[in-house]
Each structure stands twice: as structure tokens, then as C-alpha cells.
Image 1 (cartoon, rainbow, N blue to C red):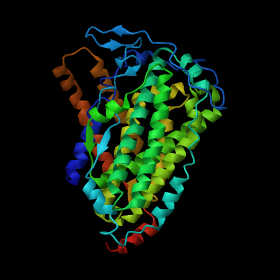
Image 2: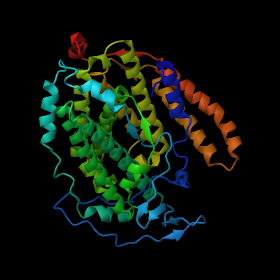
Image 3: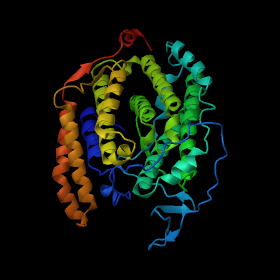
Amino acid sequence: MTWTLTSGVIHAFWVLCTRNPLADEDWAGYAALTRPGGHATRVARRGAAQPVRAMADTPTLEKAKSGEMVDSLGYKLMRPGVKVAAKETLLTPRFYTTDFDEVDEIFNLKKNPNLPMEELDAMLEEFRKDYNQKHFVRNEGFSEAADAIQGDLRKIFIEFLERSCTAEFSGFLLYKELGRRLKDSNPCVAEIFTLLARDEARHAGFINKALSDFNLALDLGFLTKNRTYTFFKPKFIIYATYLSEKIGYWRYITMYRHLQRNPDNQLYPMFEYFENWCQDENRHGDFLTAVLKARPELLNGLEARLWSRFFCLSVYITMYLNDHARHYFYEALGLNTTQFDRHVILETNNATERVFPEVPDIEAPGFWDRMDRMVGYNTKLVEIDNNDAPEWLKKVQKAPYIERILAECLQLFFMPTKRTGSLDIEGAKNYVY
């Protein structure tokens, strides 16, 4: 990715906003879904490990007109019980690659003898303890809860699990490759990336096993070989993964705390694992904080401030549009989507301002008004995608909404910001590499 700053901002906001996040996914009829009452009872608390059930309830298989195998919910199958992955769109979880030679330049101890390793060495010892080694043990409540989730809500839940599994597996692939590439030039950082990959693989496997409760699974090996990989420069990978880990922590812990207060909304026992699970995300974010501190050029100067602002807004806008497009899922858990997203973004922004040199001022007048207007424009794009007009006419109908979303994104970028960052990072610019 070799954009200049200006073209990068415009292009990325275009990518972010010109694609309907629900396109190519089977969401027909979801608009009629209202928050169900009494759709699930409180699940049993996590107890002793129980054997995972076999897929006794084999889904009804049908042949689509195209000759493809589909299940009773209309999902295309690669083979019985294995779902064809949702078609990639610009807002779906993606697989990433980077310039690994440049990564080696950043972390190579021979080329960077003054690289401050004390905190990274301490982080390695922390990851080796593997606090969640025995945490992801299922119980009998999983299959019972899955059987109670039916109709459109079942489809929404399957889509949530698939997106989550793909995102976790994407992290596993990236971290695993980084660990492999750095093992000679910086064994400490290489091992940490390998242990991050261990955590992400554990999460992805746990979610994929949850899909089996719904008589489906993803072929992760097939995805590895056939998914499109998006190239990001190493410094962009560091910015983006830091934000991804931190916002993931706040999403998981917020859901967990809400469902602990409102157990009748706990549709599925997986949410009871989120308290420990989110600590993995937090530790990953702390490691990436240490990486940023070790390379202060990523946090000092005008370019670093602009990229920090850009990546914060990109992550916040993506989440806000995605979650509002799927608000039925959050409503089924008893969450108000807008309040949930604003809380998560606020807490993520508060955490990020301790590290990044500049973050958006999300409390500035007009910030949330612009975010909400984009949700409205994106809703119009969804409606246009779902109508029966010819494709050329759909493009014409979308144009004014796309223009308005782009305009709102750019205006958000130039809204007031907060100059932030920690004092120890500011002082680290005196290191000579």
C-alpha cells in the first residue's frame, strides 16, 4: 500500500463507504424482525467439561437451481455441514499480508542495537504464562441454547459467528507469519507473535466449534489458500492491529457486563467466556503498545499524528456502520446499538489517547451527528441494493448517498482532534537507531 496521505485518506474512505456491508449476504426478511420476547431462557452456568455433541440433527439438504448444495436456511454448502464462506465485501473481515523484509528492518536487533527490549522481554514472560489455556472448555449448555435459537434470529447469529471466526483466524495467520519471519532477527518478538497466533487460533477454533452447534462449520484450511489477502505496510499493520485489539477488548467486556446484569438476554453460553477472552485482546493491545514505544518514529511528528487520526476514524466508522446495519443482533441481546457503539468508541478512544499522538475529539459538537447521518445514508444504500432495479440504475440511485458519506468522512477527518500520547513516548525520540 503506497498511498500518499491525501490519496490514502480519500481512497480508504471511499472503500469504507461505497459498498453496502450487507450486499451478497442473505439478509432478506430481516427488516421484519422485531426484538423477540422470551426467545431463550437463561443458560446454565459454565460447569464441568462435557463432551461436545455430534451433529445428530443433520440439516435438511436441498439442491439450488444452480445445482449447488444448500441447507434448510438457504446457506450454500461446500459439503454436508461445511458452509461456503460469505462472499468478500469491502467491510467484511479480511486477511492481511505485509512487507516482511520491512518488518525485519524494524525489529532486527543487529540493525537496531538500541531497540529498547526490556518491556518486550517482560511481555514475553507474560504471554508464556498462557492464563487462558484451560478457559475455553465447553459444556452441555451450548447445544441446548443453539437449538432454542430459530428463525431469522438463527441466521443473524450464524452470521455473527462466521464474521467473528474469520476475524480471529485472520489474526492467527498474520501473527503466525510474523513470528516465523522474525525468529532469527529478533527471537523475543518472534515468540510473542507466535503466542499471539496461539491465542487467535484458540479463539477461532472455539467459535468454529460453536458453529457446529448450528450444524455448520467453516473450512479454515480452504480459506487460508483461497481468501484474498490485502497488503498493508508494516506501520499501518501496527496501527490497525493495535486499534483492532483494543476495540475488541471493549466490545467483549461491554457485552459481558451487560449480559451479567441481564441474564435473560444471554442467548448462548459463549458470551460467558468473554470476561477472560477479552483479557487476551487487552494483552495483545499492550504488546502492540510496547512495539509502538520501541519505534517512536511511529508516534512522533506530523505524519504520525495524521495517520493516528486516520486509523482511529477508519476503525470507528467501520464499526458504527457495520453494527447499525446488523442492529437486530444487538437488540436480541437487549443492547441499544447506538449506545453500545458510542460507549465502545469512547473507551477505545480514551485508551488510545494514552499511546497515539493524536485522536479524534469524539465529544466535539457535530461528531455523532455526522456518524448518525452516515448510518442513514448507508441504510438507503441497503434499500437500493435490495430493490429489483437494473444494476446501472442502482449505481445512479446510490451516487448521491455515496457522495454524502464521503463528504461526512472527510469532514470528520478535519474536525477538532486531541493532541495526546504519553510523556515517555515523547521522550523516546532521542533514541538513535
